[in-house]
Image (cartoon, rainbow, N blue to C red; front, side):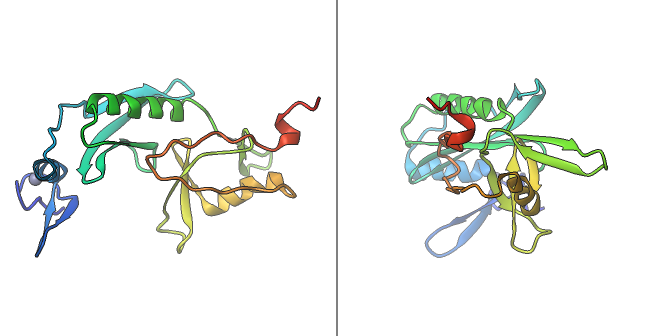
Length: 200
Ligand SMILES: [Zn+2]
Protein backbone atom coordinates (compact mmCIF):
# COMPACT_ATOMS: atom_id res chain seq x y z
CA UNK A 1 0.00 0.00 0.00
CA UNK A 2 1.14 3.56 -0.73
CA UNK A 3 1.54 5.73 2.33
CA UNK A 4 0.22 9.26 2.44
CA UNK A 5 2.93 11.73 1.44
CA UNK A 6 1.87 14.19 4.14
CA UNK A 7 1.38 12.21 7.37
CA UNK A 8 3.17 9.02 6.26
CA UNK A 9 0.79 7.05 8.50
CA UNK A 10 -2.31 6.15 6.52
CA UNK A 11 -3.01 4.66 3.15
CA UNK A 12 -2.86 7.18 0.31
CA UNK A 13 -6.13 7.06 -1.58
CA UNK A 14 -6.55 10.40 -3.33
CA UNK A 15 -4.29 12.40 -5.57
CA UNK A 16 -4.41 16.14 -4.98
CA UNK A 17 -3.36 18.15 -8.00
CA UNK A 18 -1.78 21.51 -7.35
CA UNK A 19 -0.41 24.07 -9.76
CA UNK A 20 2.86 22.40 -10.61
CA UNK A 21 2.79 19.01 -8.93
CA UNK A 22 0.54 16.55 -7.18
CA UNK A 23 0.46 14.71 -3.85
CA UNK A 24 -0.81 11.27 -3.00
CA UNK A 25 -2.76 11.67 0.24
CA UNK A 26 -4.87 9.78 2.74
CA UNK A 27 -8.49 10.84 3.15
CA UNK A 28 -7.84 12.80 6.36
CA UNK A 29 -4.94 14.82 4.95
CA UNK A 30 -6.81 15.46 1.72
CA UNK A 31 -9.82 16.68 3.70
CA UNK A 32 -7.71 18.91 5.94
CA UNK A 33 -5.97 20.56 3.00
CA UNK A 34 -9.21 20.97 1.04
CA UNK A 35 -11.08 22.30 4.07
CA UNK A 36 -8.33 24.88 4.67
CA UNK A 37 -8.30 25.87 1.05
CA UNK A 38 -12.10 26.14 0.86
CA UNK A 39 -12.39 27.71 4.29
CA UNK A 40 -14.87 25.15 5.64
CA UNK A 41 -14.87 23.58 9.07
CA UNK A 42 -15.22 19.82 9.09
CA UNK A 43 -17.72 19.08 11.85
CA UNK A 44 -17.12 15.87 13.81
CA UNK A 45 -19.22 13.08 12.28
CA UNK A 46 -19.83 9.39 12.85
CA UNK A 47 -17.38 7.34 10.82
CA UNK A 48 -19.51 4.24 10.74
CA UNK A 49 -23.14 3.22 11.23
CA UNK A 50 -25.16 0.01 11.09
CA UNK A 51 -28.74 -0.35 9.89
CA UNK A 52 -30.98 -3.30 9.09
CA UNK A 53 -31.81 -4.41 5.54
CA UNK A 54 -35.11 -5.75 4.17
CA UNK A 55 -34.38 -9.13 5.77
CA UNK A 56 -33.57 -7.64 9.18
CA UNK A 57 -29.85 -8.30 8.68
CA UNK A 58 -27.54 -5.62 10.08
CA UNK A 59 -25.36 -3.91 7.47
CA UNK A 60 -22.38 -1.81 8.51
CA UNK A 61 -21.30 1.22 6.52
CA UNK A 62 -18.16 3.34 6.58
CA UNK A 63 -18.68 7.04 6.03
CA UNK A 64 -16.26 9.01 3.89
CA UNK A 65 -16.44 12.76 3.53
CA UNK A 66 -14.82 14.84 0.84
CA UNK A 67 -15.06 18.60 0.57
CA UNK A 68 -14.61 19.87 -2.98
CA UNK A 69 -15.11 23.30 -4.56
CA UNK A 70 -18.70 22.32 -5.46
CA UNK A 71 -19.67 21.29 -1.95
CA UNK A 72 -19.40 18.38 0.44
CA UNK A 73 -19.64 14.82 -0.78
CA UNK A 74 -20.55 12.09 1.73
CA UNK A 75 -20.45 8.42 0.89
CA UNK A 76 -21.53 5.40 2.90
CA UNK A 77 -20.09 2.15 1.65
CA UNK A 78 -20.67 -1.24 3.13
CA UNK A 79 -17.71 -2.95 4.71
CA UNK A 80 -17.88 -5.82 2.19
CA UNK A 81 -16.73 -5.90 -1.43
CA UNK A 82 -19.50 -5.04 -3.93
CA UNK A 83 -21.95 -4.27 -1.13
CA UNK A 84 -24.38 -1.38 -0.82
CA UNK A 85 -23.09 2.14 -1.46
CA UNK A 86 -24.90 5.45 -1.15
CA UNK A 87 -23.83 9.06 -1.51
CA UNK A 88 -25.19 12.57 -1.03
CA UNK A 89 -23.87 16.00 -1.84
CA UNK A 90 -24.45 19.26 0.04
CA UNK A 91 -23.42 22.90 -0.19
CA UNK A 92 -20.07 23.87 1.34
CA UNK A 93 -21.81 25.74 4.15
CA UNK A 94 -24.43 23.04 4.80
CA UNK A 95 -25.08 21.47 8.18
CA UNK A 96 -22.86 18.38 7.88
CA UNK A 97 -24.75 16.47 10.56
CA UNK A 98 -27.99 17.03 8.62
CA UNK A 99 -26.21 15.87 5.47
CA UNK A 100 -25.12 12.70 7.26
CA UNK A 101 -28.70 12.14 8.43
CA UNK A 102 -29.83 12.50 4.83
CA UNK A 103 -27.25 9.89 3.82
CA UNK A 104 -28.38 7.47 6.54
CA UNK A 105 -32.03 7.97 5.49
CA UNK A 106 -31.10 7.33 1.88
CA UNK A 107 -29.24 4.15 2.86
CA UNK A 108 -32.16 3.03 5.04
CA UNK A 109 -34.62 3.44 2.16
CA UNK A 110 -32.20 1.78 -0.27
CA UNK A 111 -31.60 -1.33 1.81
CA UNK A 112 -35.18 -1.52 3.05
CA UNK A 113 -36.62 -2.87 -0.19
CA UNK A 114 -35.79 -6.07 -2.01
CA UNK A 115 -35.61 -5.65 -5.77
CA UNK A 116 -34.34 -8.98 -7.04
CA UNK A 117 -35.48 -12.41 -5.88
CA UNK A 118 -33.09 -15.31 -6.31
CA UNK A 119 -33.94 -18.98 -6.37
CA UNK A 120 -32.95 -22.32 -7.83
CA UNK A 121 -34.79 -24.21 -10.58
CA UNK A 122 -35.56 -27.91 -9.92
CA UNK A 123 -32.63 -28.77 -12.21
CA UNK A 124 -30.27 -26.90 -9.88
CA UNK A 125 -29.84 -23.84 -12.12
CA UNK A 126 -29.93 -20.58 -10.10
CA UNK A 127 -32.19 -17.77 -11.30
CA UNK A 128 -32.88 -14.13 -10.42
CA UNK A 129 -36.16 -12.28 -10.94
CA UNK A 130 -36.81 -8.53 -10.95
CA UNK A 131 -39.59 -8.15 -8.38
CA UNK A 132 -41.49 -4.96 -9.25
CA UNK A 133 -40.63 -4.48 -12.92
CA UNK A 134 -37.79 -2.11 -12.05
CA UNK A 135 -34.56 -1.95 -10.15
CA UNK A 136 -32.05 0.66 -9.11
CA UNK A 137 -28.44 -0.40 -9.25
CA UNK A 138 -24.93 0.93 -9.21
CA UNK A 139 -22.70 0.42 -12.24
CA UNK A 140 -19.25 -0.83 -11.32
CA UNK A 141 -16.21 -2.12 -13.13
CA UNK A 142 -16.13 -5.86 -13.74
CA UNK A 143 -12.54 -6.92 -14.14
CA UNK A 144 -13.59 -10.33 -15.41
CA UNK A 145 -15.95 -9.15 -18.12
CA UNK A 146 -13.90 -7.26 -20.74
CA UNK A 147 -15.63 -3.91 -20.64
CA UNK A 148 -19.06 -5.08 -19.53
CA UNK A 149 -20.42 -3.57 -16.31
CA UNK A 150 -21.09 -5.22 -13.01
CA UNK A 151 -24.35 -4.00 -11.50
CA UNK A 152 -24.80 -3.85 -7.73
CA UNK A 153 -28.42 -4.51 -6.80
CA UNK A 154 -29.64 -5.26 -3.26
CA UNK A 155 -26.04 -5.01 -2.06
CA UNK A 156 -24.99 -7.91 -4.32
CA UNK A 157 -23.03 -7.98 -7.58
CA UNK A 158 -24.74 -9.12 -10.79
CA UNK A 159 -22.86 -9.67 -14.03
CA UNK A 160 -24.19 -8.00 -17.16
CA UNK A 161 -25.16 -11.46 -18.39
CA UNK A 162 -27.23 -12.09 -15.26
CA UNK A 163 -28.95 -8.73 -15.69
CA UNK A 164 -29.69 -9.68 -19.30
CA UNK A 165 -31.22 -13.01 -18.28
CA UNK A 166 -33.41 -11.27 -15.69
CA UNK A 167 -34.74 -9.01 -18.44
CA UNK A 168 -35.84 -11.96 -20.58
CA UNK A 169 -38.94 -12.34 -18.38
CA UNK A 170 -39.99 -9.16 -20.19
CA UNK A 171 -39.49 -10.30 -23.76
CA UNK A 172 -41.71 -8.10 -25.96
CA UNK A 173 -41.89 -5.26 -23.41
CA UNK A 174 -40.29 -1.85 -23.83
CA UNK A 175 -37.63 -0.71 -21.41
CA UNK A 176 -36.21 2.62 -20.34
CA UNK A 177 -32.68 2.97 -19.06
CA UNK A 178 -31.77 6.24 -17.41
CA UNK A 179 -28.62 6.99 -15.45
CA UNK A 180 -28.31 9.29 -12.43
CA UNK A 181 -25.41 10.84 -10.62
CA UNK A 182 -24.28 8.77 -7.62
CA UNK A 183 -25.55 11.47 -5.25
CA UNK A 184 -28.99 11.92 -6.89
CA UNK A 185 -32.18 10.36 -5.59
CA UNK A 186 -33.54 7.98 -8.19
CA UNK A 187 -37.31 8.44 -8.55
CA UNK A 188 -39.49 5.33 -8.53
CA UNK A 189 -40.84 4.44 -11.94
CA UNK A 190 -44.38 3.32 -12.63
CA UNK A 191 -43.62 -0.03 -14.30
CA UNK A 192 -45.58 -1.54 -17.17
CA UNK A 193 -49.14 -0.14 -16.99
CA UNK A 194 -50.84 -3.43 -17.80
CA UNK A 195 -49.06 -5.17 -14.95
CA UNK A 196 -49.28 -2.66 -12.13
CA UNK A 197 -52.24 -0.41 -12.67
CA UNK A 198 -55.91 -1.23 -12.27
CA UNK A 199 -57.89 -0.77 -15.45
CA UNK A 200 -61.06 1.22 -14.76
ZN1 LIG B 1 -2.23 11.58 5.59
